[in-house]
Structures are given as C-alpha cells and as structure tokens.
Image (tube, rainbow, N blue to C red):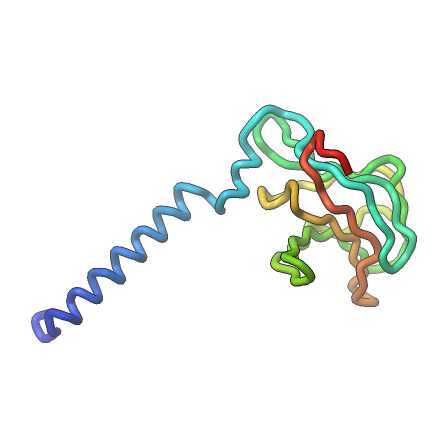
Length: 152
C-alpha cells in the first residue's frame, strides 16, 4: 500500500468497512426483516382465498408457523384447480402492478385437496400464493395472504 496515495488508501479502508458491515447485517438478520415471521407463537400467520386467473381455482391458502418457527403453506381440503402437467406453487410480492418477488415453493402435489409445503421466511402477509402453469406460462389462480385475524 506504500505506492497508493492517501486518498486511495482511505477509499479502500471505507470500502472494506462497508463490506464488513454488510456481512454483519446479513449474518445478524439471517435473510432480512421477513425472518421475524419465524419468531412468535405457533399458529396461523396469514391466509387468503384463491381467485381464478387462467382456470377455475378455489379453496384457501394458509401459512402456519410451528413451535420451532418453521413456516408451512397449507392448501385447504376444498382446494381445486384444473389438472395439467407442469403446475407449480409460487410466492409473489407486488408493488402496484410490478412483481418484486417470484419464488418457487415446489411442484403442485395435486390439483385438488389438502397439501402442505415448507416455506422460506419470506412468506406471510403481503405475499401472494400463485398456482402457475409452466407449460402455458400462465397463473391459474392466486391467493393474496392477509395477516391472521385481518378481514378479507
């Protein structure tokens, strides 16, 4: 560093300090503010009713937190959509009409009935559950999740 100007050395020190702070923030928050959903008592975190988009889709989606803080997405016994190959469950977040998050949860296990999926901590109020057909590149149904106890 002897060959660097004082200004260059200060800039490098500032950049290294900023990188250190960024790493510390990531390690401390473990994924951001959504990880707060993993904290709290076991029970229903959020739920929403499916609305048809591409094909008739009905039933409810519920996010449940277990005693260890793990989140699960449960589709209701009354869940129904049209059978097809390449159907997936996604989580989406929107700001106005702009989608800011699109995260695959897994392949849809069945076109009807109760089913459960492990979720990342990004799931909860303000997120939409989407049943998506990859073959036709269309959403078939969506359920906007609302905090437990919030009217629809």
